[in-house]
Image (cartoon, rainbow, N blue to C red; front, side, top):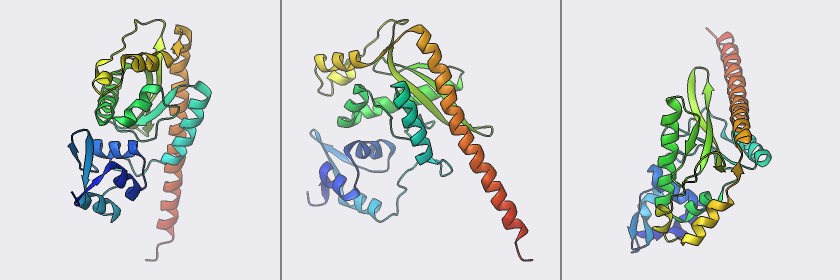
Length: 240
């Protein structure tokens, strides 16, 4: 097994946490083999990432100022006390989840739960394209969403929530979590820790999400205008 590394060895070499390892497995950046209940990673794969010959963040548009978005998103979550994240059309996270709920924290210990979350996110994106702005994830929690545009192009979907609604029937889905080793009590406790939003606050959530998406779009507009000005200067100063 000298040609294979454990999850811990891989984390140490790549200087990332466990959830990032699962994300890399899920989006194809890293290849691994599950032996029993443990993941093993070919040393060659890890060395390929360390050498810089692989894309460290596939699916991330290079034009997005992710660090700026993360700051705004974190502030939004601090004020609203709800989870928030930006996702791309494949359901992959562009930013890290702000104010993660208990279910979000469970995903860090299971690749299968991570896949289920990404599948939910991808479904959210598809539903948003059809005009919806309210979604329900595989765990049974509710979210609001708003597209972030750069000009006419959809760049990302902001999803906010992880809440229960007193206007909707509870629909906790235990199967995925029980199959991953969580007890019924743990799953119920995680679900009950999610905030309950009355109908009036749900309506406000749509406005909050729209305002946050607008802040992201303002940053993109400023960056686009700045890049355009730089290009004009470069064109003017070119030597014939």
